[in-house]
Structures are given as structure tokens and as C-alpha cells.
Image (cartoon, rainbow, N blue to C red; front, side, top):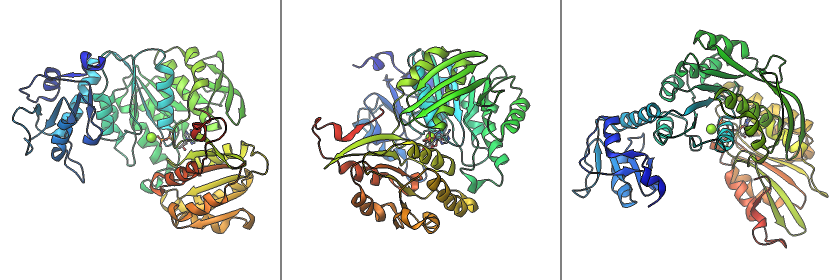
Length: 484
Ligand SMILES: Nc1ncnc2c1ncn2[C@@H]1O[C@H](COP(=O)(O)OP(=O)(O)O)[C@@H](O)[C@H]1O
Ligand SMILES: [Mg+2]
């Protein structure tokens, strides 16, 4: 039996009390899942009714995968008579109840992270540095919506020291109920940018939607906000309106409480001098780019506000591994040498495109290698879309990108704007441009692949990795991550 099962995340009694439900069986759950395909033995499976599927149809699968029990609002057909069921009124509410109960029973310091970009990266960096300071839980991936947040909360054991939860939104009003559930001690807004601009008229409206995170913050809690943001005053006013006294601005601004005073960028990361409430701090950050330097300030500000050890956290940042789809690098061996792939396939917006291209610009291709950008559409930009895509031409030129491949209908506008020598190939989709990309690669190249999740540029990364041939150093090196 694994140790988690002995301790038990949820006993039958605790889950019953939390959900006002009923179970006849005795069980202990070590985890919580809402996807029967991802159930690990000992999980409590909550049969959620989604837009396409009803979890009740998969309750039997979950039990076959050794779920400890299933949370249902009626008895699904085909279950054994003695199947361990937790019968509740409504399963989505039950999941929220579990989340709220998990939040209530812990003394953990709770950090909530929202923002236009960098939520997951900041959340993962907080997990990485705080794991070294006590039992720590964090949302899985980008589980940041009306299912992801309660699910993540429900997975928090009582004896957690630090809980870090990502909260996302694409419409006004979505964050308020989620932050009330999370009830954070520290609320981080990484930044406010025109990312989901299709659903908002103004950037101030986006800022207001992010600032909803303060609604769940206790009055003695801390708001961590970007001091360099154009919307700083707006966010400060929102914190003030929510009665938050402890506002920690982070950034390069002289008034930032967590302030970057000097930074040296290199292709592998940054070396940073800063001030945390006036105390000098110096650290190495093992992830490259200005945006990561900024995220690291937010991380230290949150650690500071949560009562963690800031020096220890800063020291840990040197070893922060790269994140899949968000800048993870691979060196791929090929005939005559090797090339580097920077996997940015998880998401894209104007601000993160510029961040990624700035990093590519700082990379030094070997031999006659080139800087290559493979770009998929940035989605959900609404009426800003056309201009946002065209504007990338300027950034690509400024960062001395040699060759550009574009995938998708919105990227066609960029293609038109590109100088002829920079044109690699263009297609309507990532699949369409894939072969042109793999054909073009030669030793020494540095390639970034980036697009919104819906643009599906991931297969291009996979195809580039598949070009890898085992090299002299051993068979594992052809898919090695360069920085983590
Ligand atoms: N502060 C930032 N500014 C600009 N881009 C960023 C920032 N932080 C992360 N990114 C980039 O934005 C993309 C999405 O990052 P992620 O952490 O997944 O954000 P989110 O969870 O908010 O969607 C990645 O390409 C990442 O490298
Ligand atoms: Mg995310």
C-alpha cells in the first residue's frame, strides 16, 4: 500500500460530511479524479456531467481502474451491488464541496495565481521553490477553471504547508467564485495583457476581471501585482477597494517592493540583482528571457508574502527546469552535428511571442546554422488579430530571425509582411507546413515552434525531435532537454 493511501486524502466519513452525501461502504481515497482514463488506484472518482460526456457513464471504468469510490448523483447501470458509491445531490457541487472542505481543514499558506500570461510558469516555479520548504501542493497543469480549481483544492491533504492554485478566466465574473473557493492568503496577478481580448472591450476591463482575485483574499492577505504594468494604478485601486492593505509591487520600477535592480541575460538564463523590501538579493535563474526574470520576481514576492524563506527560494531558482511547451529545449543530433528545438507549442499571444522571439534572438546558432521561427496562429485576439500578426514582422527582423515558417489563416497576414529572404514556407495549418520545416533543418539551427494551443503546433515539435539520430554520446542524448 502506498503511503498516501495509509494517510488517506479522503475517508468515507470526511467525504460524506463535506458533500452531505451518503455512502454505505468503508473506503479511503488517496487522490481525486474526474477523468476515468486518468484514474490511479485509490482515487475518488467524481462523475462530472460535462458538455460532451457524463462521468456517470464511466463510473464502472473508474472502479475497474481501482478507484476507491465513485461520487454519483444516481446509481449508474451495470455497477456491482457492493460498488463503493458516494451518493450526492449533484456531482459538480460535490466536487466544489470537497474543494471547500479541503481548503477549510488545512493550515497551509495558500497562494492563488492569475494573470494574462505566465500563470502556469509562475505556479510551477512556486511549487518548485516551496517544495523545498514544506509539504506543497499545486494545481496540475492549467487546471484553472470551474472544474480545475475545485479539483485541485480537493487534492490538497490537510497537512499541506503551501498550496498554490492557478485561476484562469476568459470572461468577466469567472474568477470571483473561484477565488472565494481558494480563499488565498496571497493573490498574484502576473500581468495584464490583451490576450483574451476577443471577450473584452478594453484592457481596463481585462484588468478588472483579473482583479476579481482580490474578492477571495482575506483583508490581512497580500496582493502581488506587476509594478511595471500600465494597469498598475488600476489594479492598486482595485486592491484598495477590496480593502487589501498589503500590496507588493514587483518589477523594475523604483517603487517596486520586490525590485529588479540589475539583470544579465544569457541564452541559458539570467543573473539577477534585486531588492526585497529593501534587502539585497542576488540569484541565478535557470530559465532564459526577460519574462522569466519578471515571473521570478513575482515568485519571490509571493514567497515573501506567504512567510516562506526568500533566500532559499531565490537560490532554488537556479535549478528550475524548463516546462514542456513553454520554452523547454531539446538538442537533437543529426547527420553532421545537431540542432536545438525550443518547444513553445503550448500557447501564444503577442506578449509571449515577443518573449520567445527575444530569446531566439539571443541564441547563437553554431556554424552555418540559422535562427528559425515556426509560428502558428495566435487565437482569441478578436479585432486586434490582424495587426497583432503583422506586427510580428518587426520583432522577427529586430531579433535577426533568419527564416520563418507560418501555419494558419491568421499567420498568412504575417507571411505577406515578411521580407522575401526570411520566407521559409506558409500553409493553412501546422500539419500543412510540417514537412517544409523538417526538410529545411540543418546542423547548427536553433528553431522555436510557437502557436496557440488550438493551432496545434505540437506535432511539428514531435517531428523535429523525430529527426534525431542517436549520437556518439549515447542513445538518450538525442531527445535530451538542454535546460531541464
Ligand atoms: N511574464 C510573461 N510575459 C510574457 N510571456 C510569458 C510570461 N510568462 C510566461 N510567458 C510565456 O507565455 C506562454 C504561456 O505561459 P504559461 O505559463 O502557460 O501561461 P498561462 O498559464 O497564463 O497561460 C509561454 O510561452 C510562456 O513562455
Ligand atoms: Mg496556464
